[in-house]
Length: 115
Image (cartoon, rainbow, N blue to C red):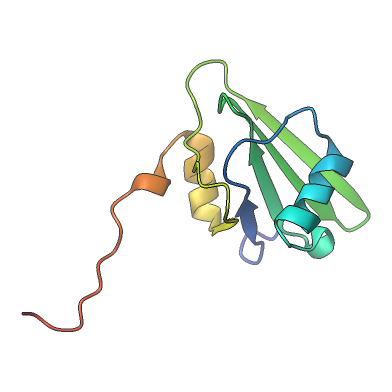
């Protein structure tokens, strides 16, 4: 498994996903619900309702890779808004896998002038 981390795109599907789905079922979700291309080499991340299991699916040259991470304790931070697909950075992926909730972090403020 070799991933060019400087070029890979990472997408998450907010809300819960049925973890009984395997490669074929998750591929359908990616193309139909998320509107993304499964063969793009992007990583697609799904989480179950209790937020203790993540699945990551991607296409690698000649086949699919499916990763699963199950927490024995604690929960993954996960957005509940099921309407949008989120694109995250590889740094945010590292934070997600470490349990850091960047979804609710302080947002950068942009002002055009002082009032």
